Image 1 (tube, rainbow, N blue to C red):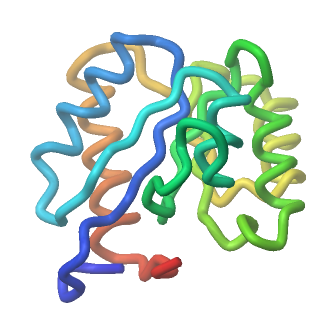
Image 2: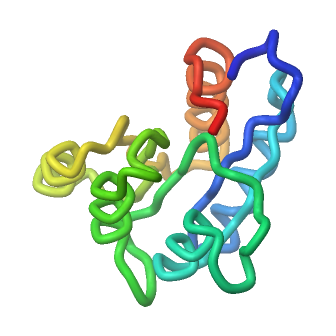
Length: 147
């Protein structure tokens, strides 16, 4: 999807930090591309959302996933592994958005077929800048699958 497509880009944010959810929401509200941010707080709920199970039956299909690695119940690496090994989900781009700058985390994420790995900046302004850049690339430049 890009600016010429009229449907809102469905973004699934898998994040357990309320502060990071607020910052992400704020950054995406200023996007030039219509988007709808759906938020889940743990890995198990992320998989239920993506598969349309339980309380997420009838939820809109995610076009893009922003995934934290450090999550309760099911870690981000497990979520990434499940998404990329499921034929019904593997086409969805997954951006790992995490505080870890550890080379092992970066390598492992790419081995699990993450589409991008972004270390969350600590400062408020830097975090908003990073998300604005992500938004610019993933919502305005890249074509995302419709389903």
